[in-house]
Amino acid sequence: MPSTTATYRMDLGLVLDPEVPPGPLGDFELVCFTSSSGKGKLHGQETCGSLRSSTSVQQSTLALREAKGRLCATCRWPLPADSPLVAFTDAVRAIRQLEAYAGPEPHPDTDFDEAEERDAAAATAIGEYPQEHAGSADDGKAEEVDDRMEWERFERARLIRERHRDHWRYLHGYMRESVDAVAAHPWLCPFAEPLQHALAAQIEHERQALAALLRPDALLDSSVVPSLSVPNLTAGPEFAGLGPNAHNILRTAWTSWQHTAATTWRALEDDDFAARSVIYDAFGRRRKGRDEVFAALDRLTSRWIDAARVAVAEHRGAPRQLVGVKLPPLEREAYSGQRRDPLTDWEAGVIATHQVAANWSACTVALLLPHPVAERLLADAPASLSAERLDTEESGLPITTLLTRWTPQNDLP
Ligand SMILES: [Zn+2]
Image (tube, rainbow, N blue to C red; front, side, top):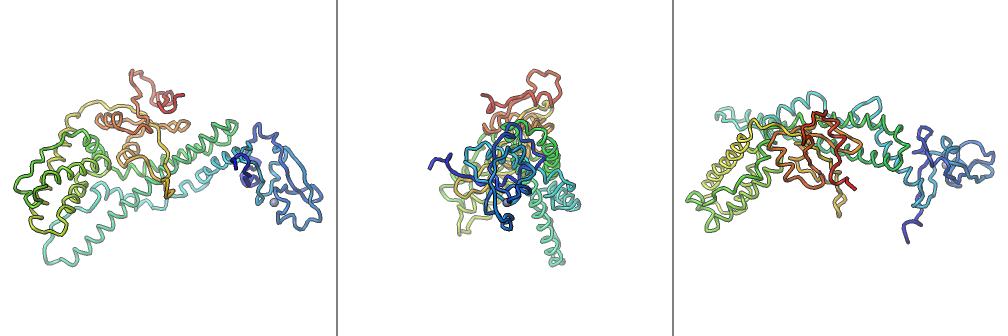
């Protein structure tokens, strides 16, 4: 059956309350049922429970403009899928999602208190995991308990960071849906504006909360990792434990490390597992020579980290760059239906850390970026980000003006 003949059952009474301007749809003729008196609520279904006490039910057709305000909140009106009222009701619903952020409780989804946030920031400033410390043998037991508590503390910090990221990105989706809804039904603008304003404040709150748990120095180090040249991977005697295939294994370890270090917001020191896991798999159950190889690998990854820091230092003093990006919406996995963020942790971290302005009517943001971060984003970012330099002519215009004047490549007709 073609979709245009499908019938939708729309909860008009719940969504279209008197505050909602119907615009040209005010003339839409709606079939309603009322009690025999013709007064009281208008119903979409003859069988509505609240009509049960009525001796007879009458049908009437009213313009939406007149019906609005009297619509039963539990009824569903049958409407053809291609009815403009279906699209309009969905648009209003998309805007009403924002009402949760305009209420008296400004951050309805934030369930961490300030002390937890502060502690998470203190932990993530150190790294992903507690620093190892050399302890004396006597207080082994006490130290074990301390260690466990420290590990739990860092785990909690990473969880808080992940929650802020998810929520921040989720809210971008709400904003985008409401912007699309207004674009299709421009008379909804005055109704949507205060709600979008409240949502923008909440998005900013989440962005700052996420940024407080990220390390700008780590993002900077990661920015140069894709452009590092392949290091010398000649396997000396220290890698003898890997057998004749040592060179290829080291090559895989390097590729794995480079990919991981380039796409995360972690400090480079916390990415060593990416190389270590390759070696671990290569050894399998074998033990012989393993410790020597891991020790040699650690020396190797430190050299890779040093090379990244040298590359960063080469850009020291280069001016920051103003870059515009469009925030890509979350995607849905085809099979599981689960949401996934097309932004890597590194890209999300760069946006959260360096955003200086937002233009929500286009879902674009301006980033003031350290030189290597800008170069990487402009060269490497996926097309969905539309990353572009904003102030190419050094026009002297304010950042918000530059941003609102910018049309991302993807949006050009
Ligand atoms: Zn009803």
